[in-house]
Image (cartoon, rainbow, N blue to C red):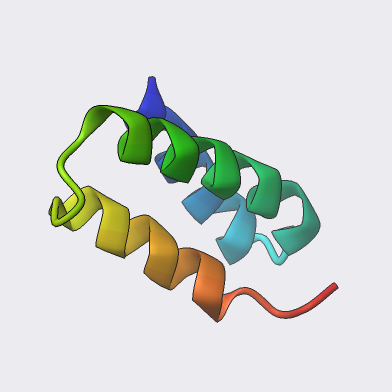
Length: 56
């Protein structure tokens, strides 16, 4: 499910709906951090996507 959140957020970003994408990325990141090792690549991908979002 977490990968689905991340993928859906990616689609929303491409549609320029970043305000809707942000909470999905934050939720995915929280789940990844709770379930994966700190150095797992999925965490870095989601952190990068969050950092690339414009400030709303």
